[in-house]
Length: 154
Image (cartoon, rainbow, N blue to C red):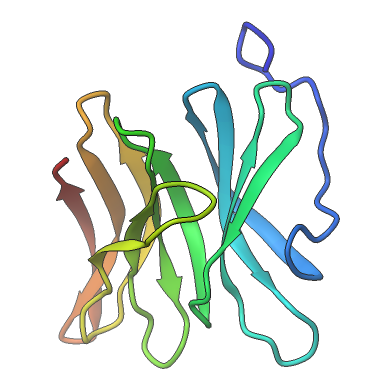
């Protein structure tokens, strides 16, 4: 990463884990950059969350696909412990808003929430230096969507 904050190295995915993938968010985690999005295989394969790490110089470092069919990550952030907080949308049936954290490229996923019974989704994730993380998105009541911010304590 350039000292002024701009990325100098261009990178195009070659299909890190599967043949189709997309990044929907980017965040800084220590000296690394992380992206959150989705990947899927060929044919009728369903999208699944994908988190990708890049070194400070912009080179690929690691990837973590998660076996959560019909789910895509819309926001990622790094908490004060260096864990990655992921928030997104599960697109099966009525949409759900899954939020979870992972310690890195491997390790146990910890759920913050898995959505509510009515349609909901997470569109963004942010963490502050104290370790508080929040997701922004929507929930529904009486078939009408409303904005919601959920805060998760360290």
